[in-house]
Length: 252
Ligand SMILES: Nc1ncnc2c1ncn2[C@@H]1O[C@H](COP(=O)(O)OP(=O)(O)OP(=O)(O)O)[C@@H](O)[C@H]1O
Ligand SMILES: [Mg+2]
Image 1 (spheres, rainbow, N blue to C red):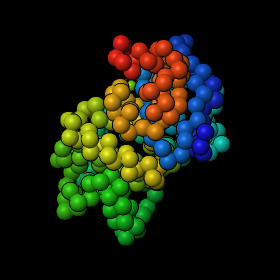
Image 2: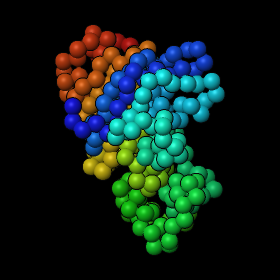
Image 3: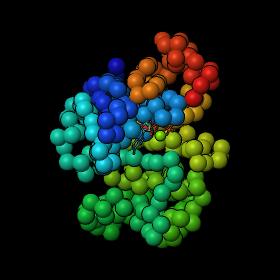
């Protein structure tokens, strides 16, 4: 395995008594896209929420095992720091409705109480919007509300917001499932560019999307990690019968 930026060791996640992530050990390689696939309810979202300590925000939820970010146990770190280093983008674009595009990009700083000089703030906004491939589209409208944008632009704005705080890893939970094909393909292209500067973990239902954009693929089933490896290998010679059945659309 290449350099792993994030690792889990026998990770279990619970809601109350119910264990929905079962002893998952995985090493996520740096500057790659790792896809997490699996049928609805298999624990994909829960799993990635353990990677930035969002799972614990649900009452009655707990984890066992370890999550290591560059060999440091994230459950021994401050949770706000963890969430800055491991960013997240959700299924539905969720720009802050009362904020401008400019303020949205900087929201992570504001929430963390970090004050920036005007020149610094301007540079972060431009840089993040460029990385999210939308600077040219919005540079003349930075002080308009983010909610004026199309769905695909809103999602790229959310990606820009997550990049602004310079994370090491970005978790994307089905980021295109609410978008049309054109907006989807724009975000798929974007992931290819983003991985040069950040490690991406992409939850997707869409087998085609996993094969197009990911370098590594993990297949989860009923909370267990059934298969993990280079996407090309997983798609051409899956080791598990279950993976094969999922890939050919027998279930899920
Ligand atoms: N807040 C919660 N409280 C209790 N159980 C939950 C909660 N969230 C999810 N679950 C349960 O945990 C299991 C895993 O759910 P999770 O949302 O992680 O699956 P998923 O693979 O992301 O599914 P989908 O593809 O539909 O998004 C499911 O059985 C679900 O019902
Ligand atoms: Mg989910």
